[in-house]
Image 1 (cartoon, one colour):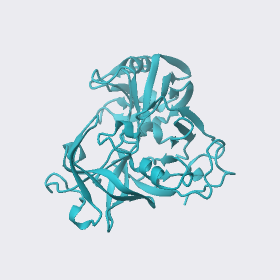
Image 2: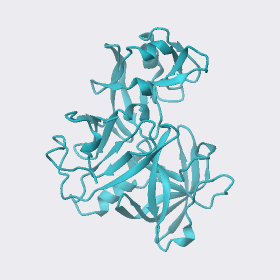
Image 3: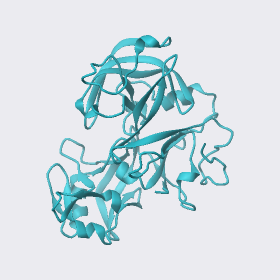
Image 4: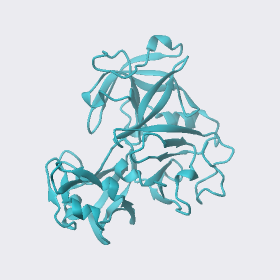
Length: 354
């Protein structure tokens, strides 16, 4: 169980002692591609693994899906005494992938916290993006204002159903690097054992209660600040593997890295020697720099014999807003992230022990 003493917790974190909370271990899949953990649905409960995603706001699991299409375990509707099918259609579209089925309600428990009559999708038609993984669905933890179902998220339901002030209105995420076990989501808590000693915590105000969106004001490359031409809305997204920024900012960042060249689909390549030497890259969030670990920035050689490596900041395509960025696991492996619904909503970043 996390260390929740106020003596060790950062200032301005709120009261964490005596309240209800729950810590859930996550599994790192595919060399940091995504992170998943168990949810318990129904009465009696059925345990299924789902991706933990702060970049969306719907819970869904596979159910009544052809086994040729859904190879991971599925939710059996007939075995739950508390299952209710609303008969309404459920459809969700992601940046990559989609899922469709029907909207349902049932008892959902994650990390010892239970949401009764929680709305979720029972999906019988996920896109091929979700095939061939151990995950059976997805747990969205952004704001319900963007939920495809139009219903509260799991944690919003928990906060509404438990007695007032019995749970701190925040959750925190720790992500490992190339290590299948050890990652964690902590509901109602901040785990000081996942943060470097004396690292402190920087709060970033949420600029839009849709995604966990904060202001990106530019980047820093080798100590040189590259200001954004306009404020960028950066979604802090555990469900995205890499970092995506507007094309204009990506171009400015790579203009500061010797030998960088644009590839297709928003990617850039950089001489591997430049990535292994003294290159430093940080994102400017709300005016403060937050570094990217070069182990995560370097995505590997373009080919086995190439002297070039693929770099980890990508340019978003024309089908995305020009002021949007998506900050994924490549960044969050270095930063323990806390998502707080209080104080107008804010994201906290602390130096991770990674």
